[in-house]
Length: 112
Length: 117
Image 1 (cartoon, each protein chain N blue to C red):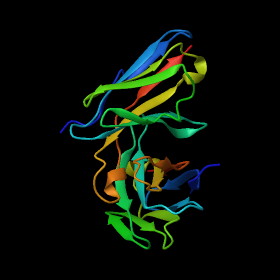
Image 2 (image 1 turned 90 degrees about the vertical axis):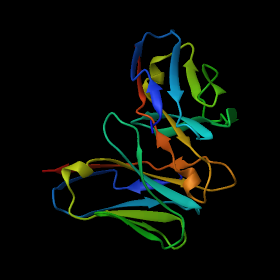
Image 3 (image 1 turned 120 degrees about the vertical axis):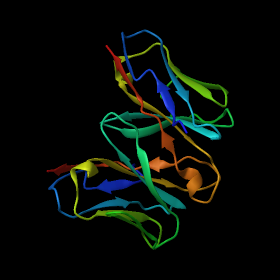
């Protein structure tokens, strides 16, 4: 059973459109990270959220941690071709270990 | 500051051969992770180290896989003998392990694309 489910799995949109990607779980996480991975490269950290209800913004990207710390969303405003990539969420359940669980991923394609 | 360094970037080998993947973590990072990524299974944690000591190797598929970290700046993942189903991209990542929430932020290398024929 996958601990972190992401939706949608695939998304193809036109440049300038808005989109939201979801990361859901039945488990509570102490913190949650979002990564973007481009073809042929490793995932690159975008943001960490730690507090229930927290909202963080990174230029056109808005990240929100659910109040119960079981889910998160990533909203992109006016998507650009440079936003194309695989978006991964990752959560930790603490316990003193640095092990995190990665989500299933959302593959985004932004068409110019 | 240099990021996580992995070598080789690409490896093509025949079934039955030994494969060694190498990783240099970011200086000062106490944790090192080895992951495998495939289309079917996504990103899977194989093993991770803290201060050069293996902490959790429950993700290592079978005895054909082994990992070592002889010092703070070097780790290897070895597959012997290799099989076609081992074909995947293998990533190394590191983190400081310090700071609430931020201690789980991982910095990934560019990966090694392994093809076993």
